[in-house]
Image (cartoon, rainbow, N blue to C red; front, side):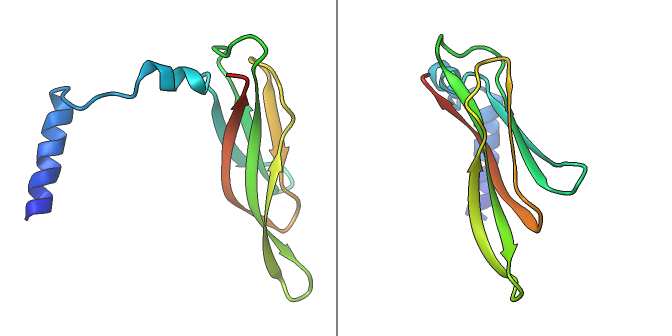
Length: 113
């Protein structure tokens, strides 16, 4: 019962604007970058990173994907991480896993921000 009252109080505080929103500096660090994942036409997991162009001069971003790769006749599962190329704002960085891979996670990395 206490948990339900706490949740209701939290929702009321959020509705009234009493809960602090993320700072503007935290939003500018990632440069408005977003990552998305999908399967390509051959069924391999693919991640793409795009930025809205709010990165400082000289900054770059890239896509990062982590996959569970099935290997060998005993089908051993190995977790592997792959990174796409560093590209500037307005460009898309893309990286994909190989065949017999399952998507574990994906994200976007920024350097120079």
